[in-house]
Length: 172
Image 1: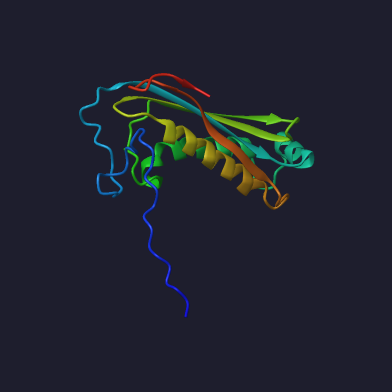
Image 2: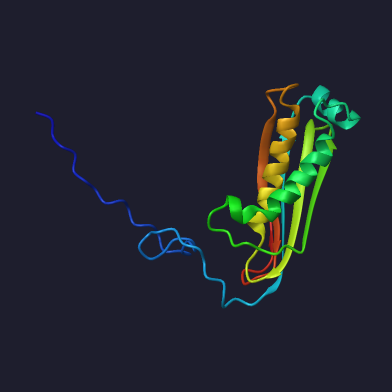
């Protein structure tokens, strides 16, 4: 007769900073930012879309079947930053002051380097908006070239810099 395994408690986490989106009883919650001062905040994120040199040449020459890959991806990234709170459940809707999405073809990758910068004056940061802008711009590039190359990879999406707020300046 097989023994029934004993239930064990998970190990206790080491004391450290608490997760801000988790309530006392473990439920997901939106952070209350009503008491925080509105300050200028900036976040920069980047990522890469890796492809063959032939596919990159097609993008740079403007001969992709679906049209202007880089221009379309830039607009998609900007739109995504503005709609982040609709995509990420616990993000606050923000009146963004500025969103830029720059996409640089890079023959050494080969592929495209995507970089987004988002700015706001408000009580909470814009890291998620910058990361969302980069993610959607990269996905748009993939969508527009997938018929030519299925093996395209999206890599390295990360926060590069954050300014403003209580935690101060972060530089990767």
